[in-house]
Image 1 (cartoon, rainbow, N blue to C red):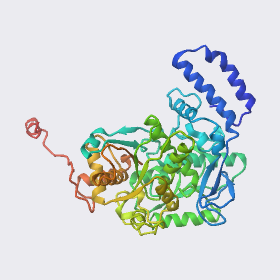
Image 2 (image 1 turned 180 degrees about the horizontal axis):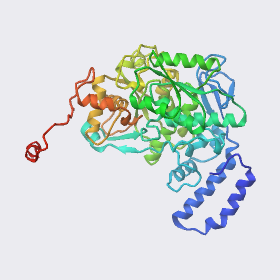
Image 3 (image 1 turned 120 degrees about the horizontal axis):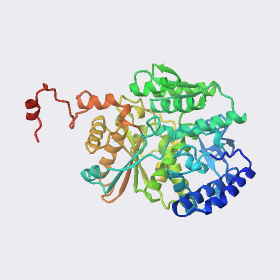
Image 4 (image 1 turned 90 degrees about the horizontal axis):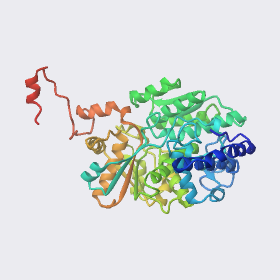
Length: 487
C-alpha cells in the first residue's frame, strides 16, 4: 500500500517507475495497471481533502476528527462529519464510479487488504495515513438476490445485503474500522491521548470494538446489560481481551454510564453518537448501488435500534447524489421491533420528537433500545428519503426469519424484523409490485443460535412457530428410517 504520509516526490517516482512497464501490457492487465496508476495519482490529491466535525443543528464552529468530542459545545446537539464536496466534485461522477469499481477488483493493488470502507477512503476519512488504518477486510459483502423469497412474497425484486458476513459478524465493523483508525492516527500524530476506548453495547458493537482495538493494540472497555446478550456476542469481546463489565441494567442504562465516563475524560466514546461510526457505515449505501450497476433501489429496509445506521444510509446515498454518482435517493423504511419502537410511535404520531420508552424484551436484542441517541439524525434521514417506519411483533419477526430460512437464507432476528416490516408494507401496497427492494441484514444468524433453536422447539415467548422443524428420533434401523422418508 502506498503510504499517504510519504512525500509527493516518492509517489511521483512510483508513477515514473511503473510507467513503461504498465503501458507494455494489454487487455485487462493494462486496465488494472491504469487503475493502479490512477490510484497513485489519487494519493497526490488526498492531502488536499479534508473532513471535520460540525454541529448537526447548524452551529458555526468546526472541530478536527482527531479531537475527542461528541456533542456541540454551543447547543449540546449531535455532531456530524462534513466533507469538502467542492474538492471532491473536481473528480467526475464517472471517475468515482470507475475508481471504486477498480478497487473492488480481486487484483486491486492499492490496498493491502480489500476493504469496502477504505476503498472509498476519500469519502470517509481522507486525512488518515495508510499505515494507521486498522482494517480486517470489512465490507464488500454479498448482495443476495432472494428470488424464491421474492416470488413467494410477491415482491418485484428482493435483495438481502449480507452485512453479517464480515469479520466479527455484523455491520458494526464498517463504522468501527473508521473510528479505531482515526484514533490510531491521532495517537500517532500526538493529537490525542486516551486511556481506553469504550462502548455500551447490546452485543455487536462490543464485538467490533474489541476486535479492532485488539488489532490496533489499544485498550478496550465494554459495558453490557447483564443477561441480555447472546452467548456468542458475550464471548467475542472476552476472546479479544476487552475488559467486559456486565451491568444490572438495560442498554440505555449502560449508555448513560459510558457517556458520563466520556464526559469525565476517562474513556474515548465509541458508540454511534460518535459520528466517525456513521462514516464507515454509510459505505453500505454506496456498495448497494455499486452492486446494482450504479442503480438505486426503490426501497431500503433497515432494522434499527439506536438509529445511527439510518443516519448512515442517508449520509451515503446523499453524498453519492451530491457528487452525481447516483441521480436519486431510495425510499427508506426504518424497521423496529414492536417491543422497542420509539421511532415508530413518533412516526405514527407525526411528531419529530422521539420520546424514550422502556424497551421490553425482544428476540431482536441488538435493537432493544428505548432511548435512541441518533434519533434526530434518523428523523432527518426519514424526511429526506421520503421514508416510513414500521414495527414487527415477536411472532412476526420470528416467522419472517423462519420463512426466509426455508428459501435458503439463514437470518438473524433483526433481519427478521426488517423482512416482517417489508412484508407488511408490500401487503398494504406501500411497496409496489414491481419495485426493487433491498433489505439490510445487519448480523450473522450464527450469533443467535438460541433464537433459532428456541423457534424450532416452540420455546420463544409471544411466538407461534408455524414453520418449526424438529428432529425426529429413530432407532438405527433401515426399515424404520425408510418408512419415515415420505418420498
